Each structure stands twice: as structure tokens, then as C-alpha cells.
Length: 315
Image (cartoon, rainbow, N blue to C red):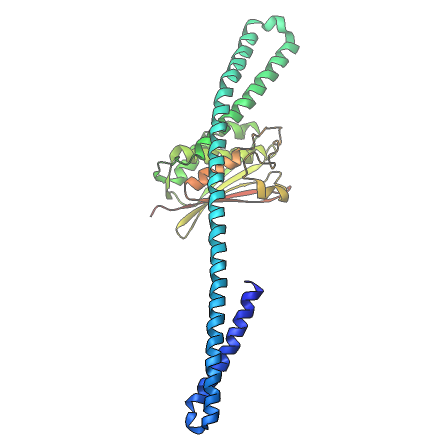
């Protein structure tokens, strides 16, 4: 609101008060002389003119503000459309680049396998180490390519999950059963504290497996050998809250706000040097959103991390 507009408001109020006072005098005209009555009529007329002029001026100011607001809204809508186009172009480029990279990476990987099989004696131990380094780099690139393709797919405007009623407790158990080897590698103890036998949500079975796997794998990565991971559920009104807790190394406070960003700078190596593409948490967040849920994290360095996922119950 401009000071000019406020000034007119104040003038309007003063003149309106004077007008009311004049009307009171006229109402009591029987007690006034002709001279006094004429004076009050004249004052009333002047005030009406002033009110009319100020009303016109205030209306023009209001119209000006409205025009500016409309223009600002048009600019915002235009910028929003540009951002949408840029995001779509970025997703298409990511998909194309990732797809085109897959073939040469696969060829390099196959070549490494052939060299190991056919030239094992000629290479010696040092040669084997070099080949294994190349193979490891290929594996890392393939992980990144798969994540890039996944991001491009999940963020596509026309992508939607086909969901159906599922028991989230069963899906959690099934996802965890597939990860037994990861727990054994670091002697990590997993505790399931599912408060109910049956909690029905609208879900895509494979995507829930992927979501749970991402969060459990992340917990394993940042938990020392012999640590503990707890997965629990809790019903809250018309929602289910799933909690993934670990007693690992924790997340520095400054990294939490950017944890779910694509290619996040919060990405770190695990306790045994496990690598990361910086896309895992971004994909997980998108999977939660596609199920109309929410995800957040609480952590303390040196004490562990809690990830919370909330889904609406099937109505």
C-alpha cells in the first residue's frame, strides 16, 4: 500500500466525519437560523464535492494497483511455463544421455570379463587389479545411468503409478527379505516392530519395495559393523507412519535441508567406502510423493538417523 493511498484514506475519513457532523446539524434544522442553515448546506455541498473528487482519485490508484498485480501475475505465469519447459527438456536430455552411455559402458564391462577369462595368466596379479578397477568404474557408471533414467521416468509429467490396496506390513517384510546379504556383510541386526498385522494402503508393490530398499540400504551404508536398524509402524488417525531408525554415524545438520535434492552435496561415502550417485534420496522422495505421502528425517551426528514416511490409509 503506497503512502499516497494512505493519505487519501485519511482525507476521506476526515471529510466523512465532517459530513456526518453537517448532516446532524441539518437534522436539527428546526433549531437553526436561516443564516446558520444556509451555512451548513454550503458546507455539506463542499464536502460532497471533496468526497467525490477523493473517491475518484482513490479509485484510480486502486485501478493502478490492480493493473500492476495483473501484470506481475502474467510475468509469474510466463516464467513458470518457461521453467516447466526447461525441466522437461532437462529430463529428456538426461534420458537420452543415460541411454546412449549404457552401450559403451556395457561393451567395456564385457571386454574386461573376456580379458580376465582369456588372459588370466598373462596379466598377472597387477593386471588383474587394473581390470577389476575398470570393472568397478563400469559398475559405478551403470548405477548412475540407472538412477538418471529412473529420475527422468519418475519426474515425467505423464508418469503415474497404478496403485491397488496392499498390506504395507507385508510389503516391508518382502522388501527386507531381499536385502539379507547386505545385513550379513556388516553383521547388522535388523529389528521389525510392526505394530499391526494388517495396514492397508493404496500402493504400487514394486515401487514400495524400491522405496523401502533405498531407505534400508542407506541405513546400512552409514551404520558401522554390528550396528542396529529398526523398522517400525504406527497408526495415526487416517495415516500410517513408518520409521526407519539406525544407530549409525548420523547426518551433519547443514546437510539435512539438501538431503533430498538431486545430485545433492549431502552425498557421502558409507562407513566401508560405499559410493553414492547422489540421486537415491531424491528418487525415494519422489516415490513417496507418488503415493500421496510425506517423508522427513531427524538425525544427530554420532548417534544415528530416523527417516519417517507417512502414507494415507485406504479409505
